[in-house]
Image 1 (cartoon, one colour):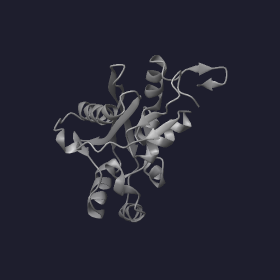
Image 2 (spheres, one colour):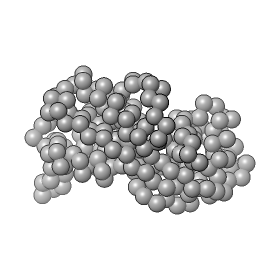
Image 3 (cartoon, helix red, strand yellow):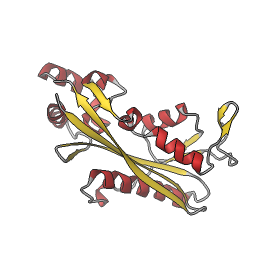
Length: 203
């Protein structure tokens, strides 16, 4: 589909196949150019502020290289007891994260940013979703970690994958837990005229 009056695809500044899938399912034409911004360069302890800043930095980095294009950046973290859980570094790390999440409610924060350098347009925000895990036993934890799925996921699980069996309920945006609050991103793109409505839907 075309993106508004501009036929250039929107750039997704993320290598996440989940974010790409979500946006393409919403009908957007995309080009993926991942950012290599150093996440450790941001020391902000507040999770909402941290993901918002990181999303803006990632989008801004790619927008500087493609100033005529609209760029989407994002960052996701899992938080429990005020502690940010990143991606597990080992099987032991993944198991510890899952034990900590077991039977409890945690928060998933995703920051998103939409930037067009030439038009001097820059937006960023964060969305939070509460996620309740079932109580996990050691056999379930060991088996899930053995699938390999936890290792590139914040909090060591994927709600859209095998890890769907871990989640008892959510309160808030499902796509936010997957990695991008699609409703908010699409609303912003429509408001900016990046995408628009036609009789056949988004165009």
